[in-house]
Image 1 (cartoon, rainbow over the protein chains, first blue to last red):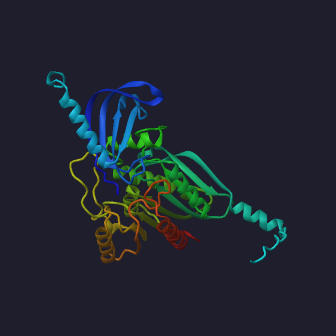
Image 2 (cartoon, one colour):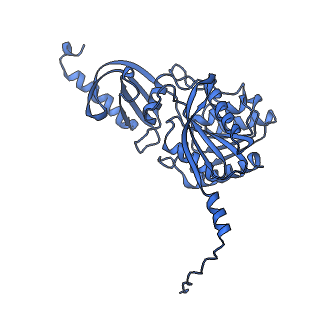
Image 3 (tube, each protein chain N blue to C red):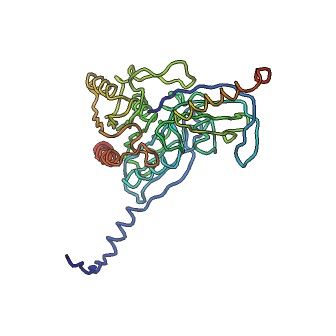
Length: 88
Length: 268
């Protein structure tokens, strides 16, 4: 199926992308739909992008649903392990 | 053990060999066509050689974009004897970008508006009909999100045949509250202007077998000619040869259904 489901969020950070160069990222697009490369019918896909730099300024990941949930938990755990004053 | 027979000498009949070779010669190229509101839109064209007239097919790519797999489909229709073209529906958002980057950009911007899709498919059909080889008949086929868009096009344009390959939300309720807006086509189905071939997987959830049955009922009630086939052991995207969803039996039978359907409606 095409889920059509898309969640967008603004982000502030950097990503290492095309041609091994770092770039500033401003937008995150998260959706559960067909992957381009992963060997699964559907994956949780995240695009870290800077639309101002054009369509290729994008770092994409395609994760199985289970691994996406593990990632969410891992991110939360990493944030929780740091002193609160550093992560607010 | 049967003895292998020696290869028989070929009957050299140059005129037949030449004729056969000509029918198997294809040309494929990228070009710009006139799409919605006069915009120039990139498109991929494939056609057989020869001056005889033939039907045309507009291929609507799946949500992952105007990719290599889509171009292979276009070439297959040329091999089947049609002038075939696929407009790049994401051209405006990402001209010249890699297909996956273009698809991501288009998704982030909300997807392809229905009105623009109709204009671009209409432009592609007009281009095919303008070719000297056209017999005036043009069909449309779409995969995944393109399946819904093929039905949408056939409700709004003068087309001679339409094929919906597992398009979601022709009927049914799309998700709400997401940037990528899509509506079902229930209110447009009474305007369907072309016979519709629908190819679905019984293991698909969008469209589900119940939604396929609902679409069947609506078309029957509106006296719209249609022919549906649903395959066991197949879910969504069973035609996609480069994805785990590929199902060879369903895809092979589906291609044969398409060939017969287009021969009936686009031939002559």
